[in-house]
Image (cartoon, rainbow, N blue to C red; front, side, top):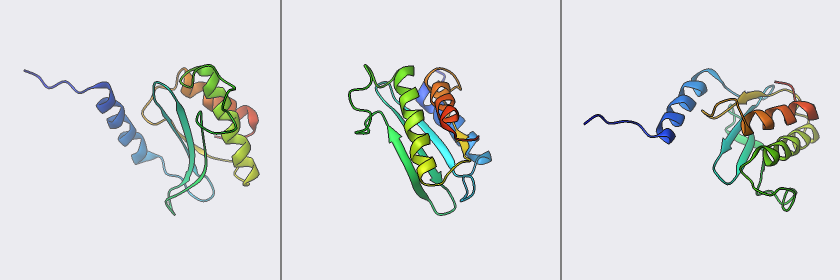
Length: 122
């Protein structure tokens, strides 16, 4: 019997491959996206220090009640706008995008596009 990896294991493998190439610095921190079936999360991380500078998710108090379901494209757009606003308040304008092993499609793409529209550069 052949051992077939699960979707989650394959995503983690892709994420490890991406993380070998992408690194957040003080000048260009890493915008990391994680999504589950029910929620989507975004963090801006400085890998040199190992510190999360800004975070936003569908669980954030600012977004409560503004979306119907936390795992869809509409909610991802709201999270993208919120993370960009918080980043610009802290003086972060340029980031490196880390899609977390997910396809650049659907909710991940919506989050990235909304963050770009709010003024983040990547």
